[in-house]
Image 1 (cartoon, rainbow, N blue to C red):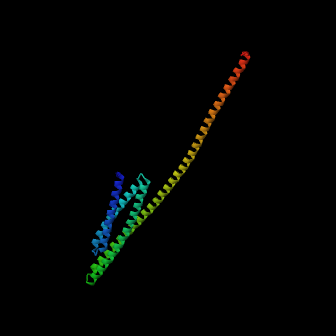
Image 2 (cartoon, one colour):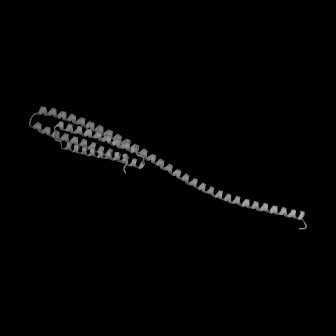
Image 3 (spheres, rainbow, N blue to C red):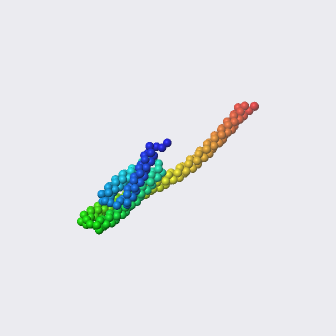
Length: 230
């Protein structure tokens, strides 16, 4: 039966996948957006909201990796977290490219409108469009830099975790060697104790025989002196 922690991990992973798919769909909508500028602004607002939710869920998954009882489970979730950060960075890049493609489409549309009149109005609209797209590109660039910093921190944490595991492995190996050495010492001590026990038994037997011989000799001498006629 799955533990509560495993259920939370699975739910978090499913939500990450859901946000990832929604972001990809919105990016495709941006690519296909012919305008106007208000439609592009609305789509970018939705993408930004989805990215914020995705970032929070990935951070939750990252925290769950640190709270695992088994190191193997923690490393597996940490690997999945790094993969999701990379996927998020890829989506950020695709988002920026989609905005550039949409800008080009809007520019072409404005050029066509200029050919049919309304030059002043279209010029103002194009200026506003370019300013908004520049701001959007700046926000995306900032988000990409933020994701890159997070990924750099994750790589460093992974290196620290691997170093900790290597140290733990060496400690276990050294403990095992000490245990083997202690076992050999105990085995040798047991042999010596058995040897000393056998020696003690032999000594007791020799002493008993010597005493018996001594008393027999004393009795014999007393018998000869006290009862020589016997």
